[in-house]
Length: 369
Image (cartoon, rainbow, N blue to C red; front, top):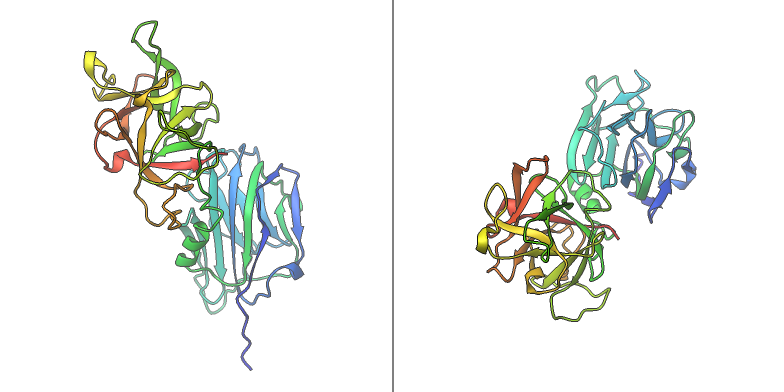
């Protein structure tokens, strides 16, 4: 008689939970979906600090099917399983390591019939391990407890975890994408939301370092830059406000193709641009300047457009977490917020208004709070 296993999954952790190196959650095997010879795990993870030694994200029983660790010092991803020929097998290390204070969506899939382990980061296929001797080598599954965080002699991680899901089948690439763009990922961005803007082509955050443009003592404006691929929670965070002269309520949804403003959280100044009269250019490219400006006026107004139609798109016509957007400056005939690989003398990346919507005008908006 052929035995069929019904596809089942369970969300073991939903809302974000803070973890330290000694924290753990333990789930009995009986709490997990009935499984045969395949499984998948998806989760969202944010690391606060890199551990001085290896750190466990999850591990099932004393064996390692399934398991995921972070390497020491830089939090490289290390997905593993146990086979009938070797205890600890899998992908040694994926990429250059996780950035701090950034949410990632991670997916682990394992199948004995397909003889492979696959791993995805933010919905994209990142690496795999393929069993070579398919007739004799098998994945060893187990009925031990599932540990999230610290397990046995392994320290856990310092960070936050959410949406930890356990599946009794191997997710396809399309199903991984669907899980990545789930309802949690689709959280709306509203007036009053605190956000960060990431330049898509260079992956650096829109920021400031307190460097002034020289407009005289009565007109203090600070240079806008891109500065690093790890978020700075002081200099990189903005609050979304209404356009100059408009009345909005905190919590209201933001429609696409709407004119809005951005207030820098740390300084209270506004994201601003202006014309290029009196040689008001950026220092290297001689483009239109982008600054932080204290005063409230129409030069702080930006038209928002969305480029993606998948990602966090929910069909509502509202701005959503993770959207790829362009920001077009209203008062200077809509040049777009722009950056590129050109570096200033201190190693930060120049930002300007230039162009009308090419790859260097694209920004990913990330919800901070």
